[in-house]
Amino acid sequence: MSRVVDAARGWIGTPYVHQASVKGAGADCLGLIRGVWREVCGGEPEAVPAYTPDWSEPQREERLWRAAAAHLREVPVGPVRAGDVLLFRMRHGAVAKHLGLASGAASFIHAYAGHGVVESPLSAPWRRRVVARFRFPGEES
Image (cartoon, rainbow, N blue to C red):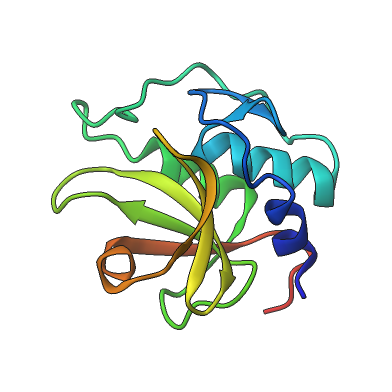
C-alpha cells in the first residue's frame, strides 16, 4: 500500500474546518494534503497564505492548480493510481478548487464541507471533474 494512502487514512473522521490542517481537529481539502505532506515528506515547503472557499473563482485564477504544480509532480490525466493527488473542477467553466487523494482506482480520500475527511467512491460524476493528477515527491512514476 502507498505510504501516502496510509497517512491519508489516518485523517478520516477529522472534521471539516476551512483553512485548517490538524489531524483529528480540523482540515479542508488542502489541509488534508498539507497534513499528509508533513507526515510523508517533512516540513511544508512554504507558508500557505489565507484563501477563500471560492479559490479566486471570481478572478478566474487557477491558484490551487499552480500551487499543486509547484510542489507536486504533475502526471497526465489518465487511470488513477493509489497515492495520486486529484484536482477537481466542481463545475464546467469554474476554477479547479477541490483536492483529494486516490486511495485506489475506485476511491479517494478528501475533506468535504459538511462531512469532514471521508473516503468516497470515485464515481463517474467525480471522475468527470478530475482535471489534473499529481504525485508526492518520491512516489514512483
